[in-house]
Image (tube, rainbow, N blue to C red; front, side, top):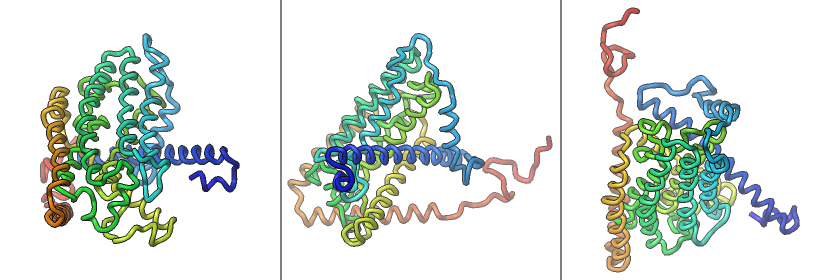
Length: 400
């Protein structure tokens, strides 16, 4: 990035300009992803509940998030009596900064990263985990028992789930031999069976454990005990209103995309389609190749975000004791077994046998995905009364 500006601005202003442009692009991308994520959340939840969702504001209701943003900006920003005003105002920005910093080391293509780090995987885990400080501060500073309970729950949940999540990140790192996310992505060039997900049974299972623990770290259902509307009103952000309330949701949707991007880089081939035996940026040119890379990467991340949304509106919320038990009794031992297993696999299993398992996992998963897609495309049986919803009385009408 600095080289692009060296011809226009003298050193060190070229570095400052490059940093400002990179930060503006990342902020705009996080805002756009939250904008579309909230719209998708409403549409998915509406379809699951046999509703239409937003339809009036813009085509397909796409501008509903923009209308809500304007409303939040115009609302009065209040702080409850007895609250710590400084910490109360600081908390949402601290949570958002943690989510924002995770994008600094996240590559969207071959070399398409704000700042390449040799320890990028560790950096992303560290900064995304610091979002909990904003949540805890919000709960503490609000002078509300509901908010304080939500903050304490989030602290306990994040501290617990960080351990199996980090162990599941180490599993693909043992296969790749590096913490550099750009290098890990480049290693998965070619066909889809080169993805880390299919390298051995331990990386295969680690992806699902990582995705579930990452969902918990993002405060998403069924692990959203920090909010828990049925118990704590709105949890840690009960007392927030206006623009500061919206920053918590920017941080949440930004973290959802960031952990999805980390999963895509570590397990799902990064920016590679899985159906091209070469690197697009090397064959199609820098601009066209990186445009394809970025599109593929964002598409994979969007799919994982949609899975998180689907889980929220399909699964019941767990109790706090069930959330902790799930981590300590299941995810933690499983992640330890996966870490030990992948190390032994790398040392003991011969290359021909490992390659055979690799092909079996890849083609078995492809066949399962194809069967699932065909089953979803199959038309559902129609009710005898046209236009009636499931459970409605057929052939009867209700007169007011």
